[in-house]
Image (cartoon, rainbow, N blue to C red):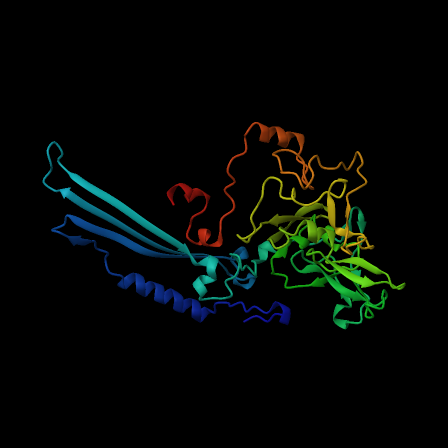
Length: 399
């Protein structure tokens, strides 16, 4: 058993020479002693029932090396039953033979349910995916910001464990987390106001949306309250300022976490490939958890547009309560410019196909594509159980 750190604790087993020899011996014995399969006959052979039960187990390992971990990729349990019945064995009328044939096949893949509950460490598939094969977690940060090398990020913290965090580590191993910065304090945060800091995680854990290449930088930005919370479940806090006036402020108002709330729970892999940024690029794999439904059209059309003066922005609130009621007042969008136009529809209006709404801006080509009715059913969103029972896109007509 290999040793890993306490945060990455997941035992990985390697077959010794003795264990491999034992497995081969058992397999050979089963093949040698397996009896010949025969059908069940009833009613003097008029009814025959054939069938078989099959177990198919497959594993993946980089370069066929057990040192790089052997991950369970498939554990199919297949039951097939074939039934034949002769209605008229001696013929009937002009027919020499009148018979029927029915075939029933059921498949269940235990890889989606942690080897059917036998091996909890087989957790690379399904809604509870927690540990990915190495080839799905090799994507690395370049350490570049455009053409500038920014290298490592240093954290000034009272916690020794967070002294320095590498910014050039794996996408799946680092995540922006709220950590107090003792250089910036106020009476309500004497230990420091939280800021975004890259903190190490299990390098084989799936990457969430706030970790994948191309989006990770958006999630490091704090909201209007200036406190990084890594949370988009916005709420409003009523307090008293230094002069005794009641003021409102936002809580959990980080913009990217608010706008990508539905996508934030999705999980991905990240694969290292050659590229132009310091010789490195990453290939995003996923979403890999079935519960993350993919919306191919207008996934963000329900979030208010910050440039549209008719949309209220939930993550920006007026500090002064509303006169008479004392309720909070949300600010509207503003600052529309030619390079950043407001959406055509308000968030309060019903969505229309191919028309911008919220922060959804369909291109002209995509709008014409939709108007011609060329879009069809998107056979990608299936549940955990549908995958396990082999009810994917190719089996929809046979369910």
